[in-house]
Image 1: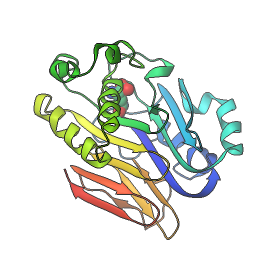
Image 2 (image 1 turned 60 degrees about the vertical axis):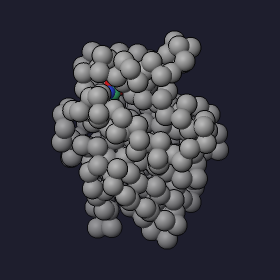
Image 3 (image 1 turned 180 degrees about the horizontal axis):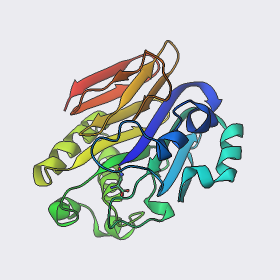
Length: 242
Ligand code: GLN
């Protein structure tokens, strides 16, 4: 279980969502409200990536222990960013490069969930990748493999929402108990999926935020139904079944 969020809109300090909101990402690390699907706290790592860039900062450990990030996040203002706190799946390494967001220099990507039967269940999917991709994955984790599959498929110019929806179906076909909530942004659009875990959206005239849990008590937060893909920018939010 992890918690993640992405924001597009007028530039705001990263700290607004990471630390200062009533149910900020930091609070969701130690007191999440909607962790159905396993896990209790998200203390194994954290990361944030923002545009222009993307620039990425990620570390293993609890987000609240990083005074440097708190200071940085109060100073950096961004109109497009993605952040996550991590609860490592049992057996997976707790190291900086296992933390989201993953990036190829264009997209920022996060995965909330797990691949069931890892790693054997997805061995055939992994074999579709060049061996050099497997040798250079950020970490030997399910999330890093999923990102490697996603980034290769994005390179073909395919629609990002289709890439995430199709990969979700392919993984569930071989690993049915998987949990696959993806979130990614290229700075102009946010694409996400719901497959077992929660995802909420807050949309007004000028901004859109997707988050595993609402960041405050605003009544305008809407839950994305399970097994859906969402494509959002400040003007439109589209949600369709996978
Ligand atoms: N399985 C992923 C990892 O270990 C994501 C974990 C999560 O969503 N809790 O990093």
